[in-house]
Length: 272
Ligand SMILES: NC(=O)c1ccc[n+]([C@@H]2O[C@H](COP(=O)([O-])OP(=O)(O)OC[C@H]3O[C@@H](n4cnc5c(N)ncnc54)[C@H](OP(=O)(O)O)[C@@H]3O)[C@@H](O)[C@H]2O)c1
Image (cartoon, rainbow, N blue to C red; front, top):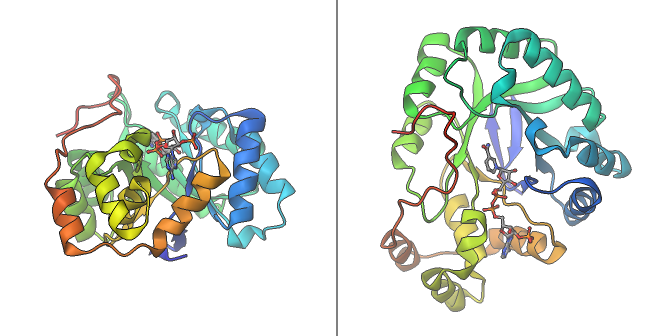
């Protein structure tokens, strides 16, 4: 598995998303993914599944140094003491003494970004998270974080898939050598039923979902975290890495509509 090097961490380019999986279902999915070779697990305090993920990791024989775990602080907990409390609760549930990456899950209109990053940087300096980052930050917010606060963010995790163009953010991140972690990389499963992707997949003996994932992972500085509860899908998503797309495939994908955003909560500042 290829990794992205960013702010001192080594991020496996394909990870397992875990939103909407909880309890035994989540634990079983994470155990299956770890068995298949996944070494990057994405969670968040808001998902209510850090305890199940902690149990799966504890039951695995994988050395901590070989595993990447991302978790996130929810937008209601962005005051300094609230971040600390949320972080401690996350570590506890995950049964870990550190996470690899701690993200601001969503921006909020009331957050004080310099204070937020002061706390996150302290957590990094204390070694309790190896790196810090953001999710759902638009270019204006990224500029504040990167150019004014100069926080060492290791990624921006945003919605990105064949149905949603993210060229402007990608260009900004690339110029600053910051990876983009693509969430909803399968457009919440919709990519699997897309006729154009099915046709491309047929050519390569691959599925439409595999085409959608490989299209993302062929791009410099992009990682992806598809959620898959079933072992067959987890395996198929790993196998997507072996697929070779050609220029004709990329042209066919570029010709499709790509303005469909599926995640956009009202409480966050608007996207450009
Ligand atoms: N930072 C944020 O604000 C944010 C927001 C949204 C999501 N995320 C993260 O990103 C992860 C992924 O996003 P998502 O879960 O919303 O959507 P997604 O990964 O785009 O799609 C998940 C759906 O695709 C299906 N699927 C997976 N692999 C497949 C395959 N090979 N063939 C056919 N179908 C397949 C899954 O089915 P089964 O589950 O039935 O296997 C599930 O229904 C989340 O789990 C979460 O970790 C972050």
